[in-house]
Image 1 (cartoon, one colour):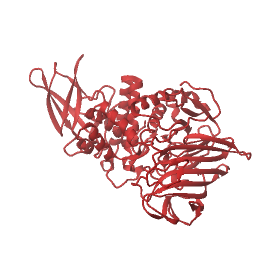
Image 2 (cartoon, helix red, strand yellow):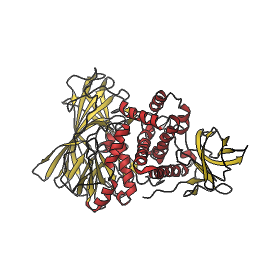
Image 3 (cartoon, helix red, strand yellow):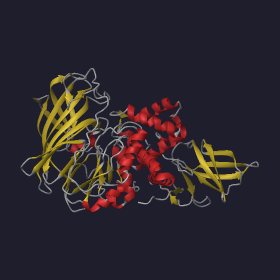
Length: 617
């Protein structure tokens, strides 16, 4: 997910050749998990999900592991402002312990009937919990199917960055930027329960199949490949989709609109033709935003491994505030397309989620950076590759700017670590640019520790090993240590489990002939008491002369003597913007580097810091 506006207190701005309009095409058949045929020994004989063996349950899940959800939903009242639906959800589970009941998440709506393996049963509701009695006890490891018939109303969504408490669930937005009604779902972080009875946690990935009946004038899009469209003869049409790559349940998406223009990009090297459904008034802007998205696909598959989802589409929709990585049907906020760079970056970021967050799910909400920070890092890697050195530097400066702005706008008591300590936190509390920008730079800094080639090779293996499953931060650390034979505990303690970043001053003084003494002082008052330890690249300058040196910073104050062919008159800190850090500035201190501004910090009382320039929008 990306956001065109920050998610907490609006801290900072986050952030083709196309064919003519055509009817909705049949998307490419989506890929099945490579190991789907390897049914586990404890999978119940004869039970499958749409022909796929159930496999082995994720025993980290309490009570049950969701395998797949089949949704049959129909609009029963299309009156504007009073839209209603009826639905049946058929959920296939594997038990992770012996059970006599199962608890699901469901907020609102009216449950009409519940059955388990075809046998009617009873249910009770407490708050947003739906408890289903099992007619027969279910053994540990056994599979069973819960069918729930229910009805409800579409929530009335609002346009713009209205927030996830106001928006979320299955919504009807009455007036988009074209003045027309749009139906859509928005489930992140725990809003799926507002319209579906599910296990609403990102670790619990599932396959998805949808059967959606809407007024016939609407184009309806959902996850995966389209397997059928039926005209019902009553001014309705039923659209069927199937996505057999397990995804976090917040990825499930339904969008319906009567004025989308379906455009497509050139085929990527893997054969995927990416569709984008655009408002007719925004076609030119959308074409610009997606002009190289097929090249992004090529870079990601070449660098980080296969795209395992088959179909891929982007939908212009309201009420997001940025982008949402619904697997294979990414939502793109309708207002972004007036800012070409923002829309392009969001599309690149959301495609990256099909490796980080969607394919490899997060184990807990506290591991959110493994989804968002990874996707921002992959975005930066692609832009470096495609846009060249200057474009890459501008991108990383923008990432740093947003991260610094976020952390310097918080009171120190509000700062969170990139990966907060357990217990699991409210995801909206962590929903700041820390997990995006600090997270992306954590990976960028790991390049300096283990080498870019080694990190790239590791990440390709990471996405392959954990595909279709969930992983946490400690798994990342231990696996990377094993792959590189390096002790990374100190690095993770500082940059992942700790808070904030270095704010420093750098001074030079003549030492012996040909040598210069460089002193680095850290002035931040939050973070490690003894200061951060990190390699710091400096560019020493005197007129047209320049020289790069690296100082191993090991505490609050470090002095190192380096060889230099001249006496420096100025110093550029971190010239290639590879460190999540900045320089202190203000009275008596050197000016910020060209283009950067000296800005007051809220977090650090009395301190001013150098802030990179904003990238063009």
